[in-house]
Image (cartoon, rainbow, N blue to C red; front, side):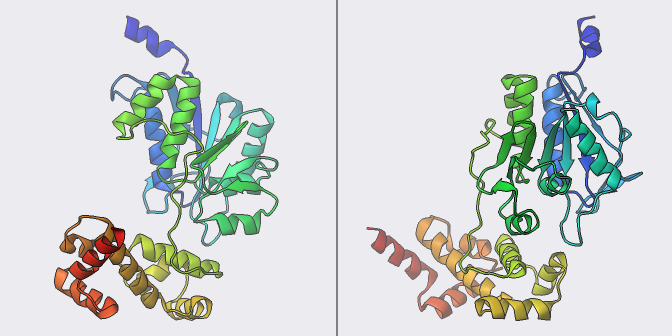
Length: 332
């Protein structure tokens, strides 16, 4: 009887999701799963303390950037039925254009005092609707240049996981979404529920909004936005590097054009830049960790220790073990 009565109570947190075309699946899944874990006892997944729906923004299934699709389960109406409306942004390449009725719905929600959340590039959707004017927003360092170019009047930070500025909440994306979700859960349901959700997700505890974003580690500074993005992708894929042709696909640019822009901007080809990254990472790992040489070789994108050793000796004139020994001598 007690359990049945509880199911009849109104939820303390009501969330509607608005998925942009080619939305980021990680951002949506992380946020909604935090709600799921906080809404019920254990892992039972009943929508008791929190309730969420996926609003129909495109007349049918919405395809994410990885190709998986999500089917909406609620019409795009009655924004006042929600405490928060969460916009999950998508890929910017090719134009992240949402339907006019979604923009109108967001403006109606803002006028009704509903809190608006932008996950990942959802901040672009809110800014294009004029709904970040006068607010501080969090934007990933990966998309900062594009955001500033399109919305020069907006105030942003790119060194915080998320920002909660009155009734606008924005985050950089990635794993920061679960901490923003925990922030909402703590506000509406309680800290115990927020901590419980994150613990199950193998996060130690909710992090505050001012927690620093991990920032890019660039060994060469670029002024060309396309080159800058290619550099970041090369760094992210260093452990198992893809061919340069595969790197070009998500950037929407041909290999020859990318190589020309790379050379013009930083005086290196993409392959040469990757070699420099490998060398710098190898040197740092050898001199600052106790990883075996074979483990360092895998971290730097080599399939075997012998080829890694030849690479290090060619570039530095020393074997990996000698590089490590030199670092330890200098540290003393």
